[in-house]
Structures are given as C-alpha cells and as structure tokens.
Amino acid sequence: MTAVQKRIMVNRIALGFSTLSAVIALAFLFWILGVLVMKGMSALNWNIFIFEGAPPGYIESGLKHALVGQLILVGLATGIGVPLGILAGTYLSEYGKNSRLAHTIRDISDIMMSAPSIVIGAFVYAVIVMPMGHFSAWAGAIALAIIMIPIILRTTDDMLQLVPGTLREAAFALGAPKYKVIKDVVYRGAKAGILTGVLLGIARVGGETAPLLFTSFNDNFFTTDLNAAMPSLTVTIFNYAISPYEDWQQLGWAAAFILSMFILGLNILGRIILFAGKKGK
Amino acid sequence: MIDKIFFNFTRFSALLILVIVAWIFVVLFNHSLEAMNAFGLDFITKDEWAPNLDKFGAQAAILGSVISTFLAMLLAVPIAIGVAIFLSEIAHDKVKSFFGVSVELLAAIPSVIYGMWGLFYFVPIIRDIFGGMGIGLLAAGIVLAIMILPFMAAVTRDAMNTTPDILKESAYALGGTQWDVIKDVIIPYAKAGIIGSLILALGRAIGETMAVTFVMGNVHHVPGSILDPTTSIPVTLANEFTEADSSLYFSSLFGLALTLLIMSFVVIAIAKFYFLRKARRA
Image (cartoon, each protein chain N blue to C red):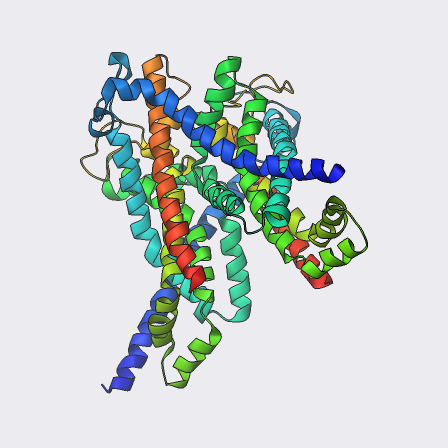
C-alpha cells in the first residue's frame, strides 16, 4: 500500500468512526424521545386535565394539581428572576462594562449557571423552609429564580452589548438621560434577544426537579396556597415513576410528555424569535 | 433623579448575585459545622452511614459521585467528540442544521426524563446482560453519559467551529485529507476550547441529581464492582433530606451539599477560567 492510499484509508476509517458515533448518539436519543412520545401519547386523555391526584387504582385521577402547581411555581420564579436578571445584565453592559466588579460578577454568575441545582434547594431549605417551619410554593419559586437569574443576566448582558454604541450616542446627543437611553433605545434594540433569553431561562427552570424536592415539596392534591407545599410536574414525575403502581407510572409518562413538549416548545419559540429578530435587521 | 434610582436598581440586582453566592457558601458551611466538629476528616474517609447510630461517613457518596461521573465521561467523551467532528466537518449543510438543532433541543430535555427512561428501559437490559439488580454504578454512568452527551457535543462543536476556515483551507491545499485537517489543524487549534467544554460537561455531570437518582440505588457502601448499587452525593441528598430526624443527620447532609458545591465549583472554574479563557484569547 502506498503512503497516499494509507492516508486515504486512515481518513475513511476515522470519518467512519465519527459518523458512527453520531449515529449511535442519535439512536439513543431518538430511542428516549420515541419512548416518551409513545408512552406519553397512550397515557394522555382528558381526565388528566380534569382530575387531581388520587390514590392508585382510582380511575378519576389526573394531573391537574401538578399542571397548575407547575405553572404557579414557574410563573412566580419568572416574576422574581426575570426583572432581577435583566436589571443585573443592564448594570453589567451599560454601567459596569469592563470594570473589575463587572467581570467578577460575570464570572461568578457563569459558574452559578452550571452549579448543582440540588445544592440551591438545600440552601433555600436552610434559609426559608427551616425558619418558616413548612414547605411552601414561595421557597420552590425562589430556588428556581436563583437558578434562572444567571441565565437571564448572561443573555441580557450579551444582547445589550450587541446594540451599537452609536445608537446610544445619538440618543445622548438629543439630551436624553441615561435611563431613557437604556429604556427606549438599548432595550428596544435588544428586544428579541432578551425575550429569547427569558424563554430559554423559563425552559431551563421548568425542567428542574432537584431544587423543588425539599422546597415546594409535593402534594397529590390541587392547591393554590402559596404558603403550603405545592405539587409540580417534575416532582410528580419522580414520585409516580418510582412508585410500584402501574396507573401512577402511566400518569408519570403523561406528565413527562407534557413537560417535554412545553420545554421543547419554549426552546423552539425562542429560536424562532431570535431568528426573526436577526432577519428583520 | 430617576436616573440615579434606575442605576441603583441595576447595581443592586447585579450585586445580589455575589451576595447570594456568598450566602450559599456561608449557610452551607454553618449548617455543616456540627458534622465537621463531630467527625472531622472521618466524614470524607469513612463509609459508615448509619442514621440510627448517628454516625455519618460520606466516603461512599463521594466515591459514587466521582466514579459515576468518571464512567459517564469515559463513555460520552469519545462519542461527543465524534458527533462534534461529524457536525462541524463531515455533515452537509442541511443535515448539519437539522442534526445540530436536534442535539441542542435534546440538551434541553429535563434530566428527570432521562432518569425515568433509564429506570424503565435501560436497567432491565443491564439486568439481563450482567445479572444482579441492574441498578448501580454502571447504569448511573450510562444514563449520565447519555444525558450529558447532547450538551457536550454542542459545546465541543462550538469550540471546533472557532477554527478559521483559512487555516483549514491551507491544509487542504497542501493535500491533506479531511482527517489530517481535523487531527493536525482543528484539534490543535481548538484544543483548549475542546478540553474546557469537556470539563464543563463534567462539572454538570457531578451535580446531576435526577438522571441518577432513579438508577443508583442509594446504598451507603463503597461498591465492590460497578454493578453494585451505591449512592452519590446528589442521590443521598434527594433521598434523605426530607427524612433527616436528628440535627447531626441534617448537618451531615449539609456537609454533603457543601462538598458537592465545592467540587463542582472547582471543576467549572478550571474549565471556564483556565481552558475556555485561554481558548478565547488564542
């Protein structure tokens, strides 16, 4: 075999391996997706949206409690996390810029983005659940908000920096005060990007289970009391999946399917908005 | 006036991040003091975890975290690099964008679902092949590997994509095959970025709770083989936090949480500040 033939062979083998690994990865991931869709679809029916949790064996059992609880928890977390994240990102991009403090905040926040979420749960347990003496929706929402802030902060910071400095200067030249420049010029320019960041942030915390285990805990019944334990889709999936009852496991698959569709939907929507925003310019 | 208020609001929010992070460390440290005083170094070197005797040694949990993460990396790294090469160099544009987006979307699927799938579909397979219970380190490592694969592949691909086209084209012009270009141009160029991405994925895997809680078993013993059920730090926390009944038990769990936080903080910081910063500068 000549040297050239050998190199071509090695090339084929290496590329073959890389394609093979892509196929293997895709096979596993579609296996999971396939199971999720098959199991989830077959377990879906109207009862799920009408009834709340029931002991195993009841026909009239559903996921209404978990669906509503999930919306409340994620809604509260969004209400707390998004304003804080956007304001903090604004500080970094518009005031802090390249100062030492701004860089420190960026670094710490970046690390927090990948920090173990269960530890956040333990922290919130110590500072909220223990003093209050009981689990609560507030505790769960705050845990989720702490996870959300670094994500929103990062995208806001990045997106605001993309707004050209000349736009800001033009507004300043018209005599606008800084907050007005930020509010009417910078935010407007970065609208699509910030919105995408918010959607991705919501999608990220929507799938979190670990920080909720000992903050909002769980409840098998419908509740809107923010000072009591609050059911969530994720914790319900966990509890139903490890239970020995087949009908609970079925409901767990249905919950898993609904949750995944919700999160994938948010991700896709975020991408569409970002794409449309880019195209518009 | 409004200007000042707005400025102070933004500064307050930004500083809040630092406050929260510092607060997390302080709170976890304070709550784990009791266990640290009671056990000292035994806390991380002994594996006797007996709530009824008020004896807590976290060695099994720490080892479980390290070994399951190591197994996951062992399985996921070669495949993730393969996928990244496929995505950045081999696939045609249409395949690339479809495949690329699906990898990114899969990275968004909640980990509890990977865990559930592992419990119902993967554990029986391991049980059939290797015997035993099926749940244990091997199952945890594999499920963890599958879970971090999309994230790992996506960030590794991004690192590879930073190689300037002109460098690749010069190598092709010299008669290099695709593999020559990958091995001698892209990988050396993007080395720091690739290593950083892989370590970042490792940092995520260490702290992952839900994907492994289902399949680990929560048994506090240093396992004799990777087929034995054992536990990891997040698994122990998830299973026992709401059941702890003595203050020493609680304190030990907080000690575990602090250990985990420090482990992942260090790993992520190495990835971000050493490798990824170097990659950006290059």
